[in-house]
Image (cartoon, rainbow, N blue to C red):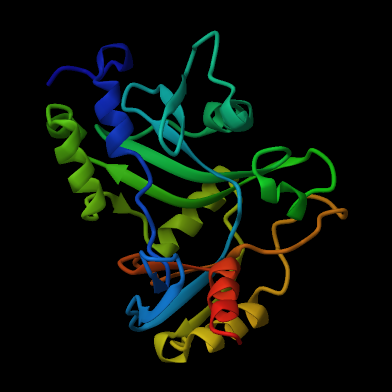
Length: 259
C-alpha cells in the first residue's frame, strides 16, 4: 500500500467526503414557505439535547501522514505548513492552533473534528455571544473515514450520495465526550438526557419546550453578550437519529398561524 501524501492526494474528493451533512429540522420544513409542518423526526429511547450554537461550521481534517487540512463547511482553506491560508470568517486563525496540538491519527484513516466557530464578526448572531470581538469554538461532532482510498476514485456525485445517505461514521456520545476530554476541546453545551416519549410533537408545545430548556445561550464569550440562543440539537446517544429545533422556525410558524 502506497503511503498517504497530502500533496499527491485527491483533495476535492477528501473535501467532499469530509463535509458535514445537512441535519433535518425536528419538524419538517414546508418547501412552499419555509414554515414547519406537523411531521417530526422519529426518536426512540434516550435523547440527548445540546445547544445549537450560531456560528460557522468548520472542520479540522486529520490525515494519515500526520498533516491536516482546515475547512469551512464547503471549502478547504488551509493545509498544514502553508504560508498563506484563506482568511474566510477567521476559521484558519481560530483552528490552526488547535490543529497543531491535536494528536496524530492512528492507522490509515481520516479523522474529522467538526467545530462551530462563533463570536467576533463571524455571523450576524455574533452579538448574542460577545459584546466585543471575542471568538470561540465548540466541538459538536467527530467522524472517522476509514475507506477514503476507495472513495478517492469516485466521482463527485457518488461521494455526495454516500455522504447524504449517512455513509460517514460519527462517534457516539460517550466517545465524543472522551475525545473532548482527551484533546481539551469544549463541547457544545449539554442540556439534558430524556426519554423520547417526553419530547413534544406539537409545534406550540415544542416552542415552549425550547423556552424551558434554552432561555439563554450557555456559550456566551463575555458578560456583554446579548444572550439569545439559536436552538437545540436533539440526538440519540449513538447519533443514528439527529435533528435541530431553532427558535426562529417555531416563532415564524406560530406567527403565521396567529398564535
